[in-house]
Length: 343
Length: 176
Image (cartoon, rainbow over all chains, first blue to last red; front, side):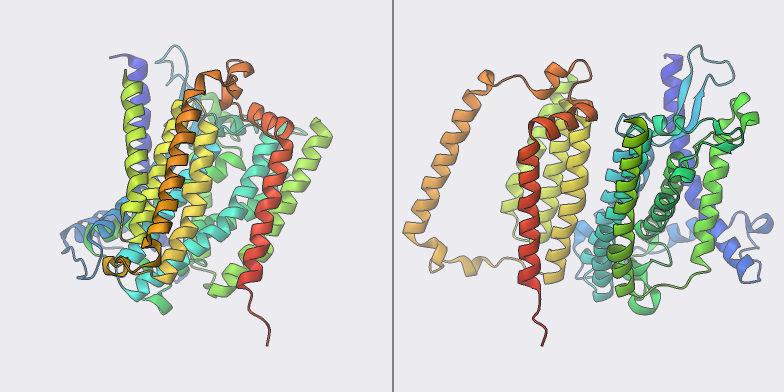
């Protein structure tokens, strides 16, 4: 087999492997950080310092009995978690996570780190993440339970409201970069201003970055916006009736979506794999990328255990009356400035 | 060869899913079939070298509009359509109305066959004069949309705005 094709397949496999592990590690990180914030250890018994806790969790979920409520819709009940997790994995397909590399001289021509590179990459990520909501909505409807239905309804309403602000903040970055390809957006951020400020779009788009992060938290249904599964009101929301592996797929999809959201934020606003010249020189640019993604993921978890949940009507009001107008103003100003300086 | 197979697979999915949209008794399944049909259409656009149109199709139709459809179907919790309700006494089953519908269907078939016969006479598609980048170039697409078809674009947006204002007026509750 062609070496190049093998390497490309290897990169795709590695991306998949990293995502699976990201979901397992994030579960552990979440519990550890939560423990730290609440002045306790968190999981500690399985493996050294509780490092193998995710394995134990997965094993436990695999051994559980699979239940399906009598009135549930058989096909959609099974389809919903599959749809959720498939969309989560597929969304990462066009996200680049490292500069072009020859793998320390193994290849003659450099290969791009990332499952694939499409010229409309930003939109592909957005399109596939927006498909993910069907998993939650269908789970809510197919369970034939009032709590699940409420969770599903909330998920769809929340998704529609926050997708607008999310997409509009993306559009501002696309305007700046002049490209819809994530790789080209990242390459537009190499170098520095005045010798020490990195040319990251976060400095040109501070408002856009804040809007992106807030909308991203809402899109991944994380606290303080986790209304589809608000425990105090809806038991467990859309996944109330699920058990065993089918249940496990929902949190897995959520954690992978978090990772995707952080990776895209890194690519769009934080300069992707640029930033540590010392690592660039050794072909280890992806380490920089992973570091940045890790910082954003930590912030995600930090926010979850610090900020209390909103009220549902506040969430809708905030999305439509504050976040969306702010992102539109941001887009208009960005467009005007780009036209002024480049036009 | 592989492309032809994929084409027939996608086209078949689109047709079957579209037929099932009206064939399903459960409105929930109808919505899902419509989404499947849109996804197959997006695949066809990719085959036509128009990834931007394909992604826009997914984002706007499958992603946003259908979520709204699903939301409404779930909110109303529409029951399965009952076959007994659609017996001969239903107003839509009267012979006059049925004949009118049949005439409309015949006109549609005539129109479609006329349009399909004239396909070879059409002027070249947008991509062909734009050089190798073709329709996949978002820049080219934007230029055509906002320069050549600028009026149609603006008219459509006003139309949508009118529909939106209408919906707000209809749904608004009078203050007591």
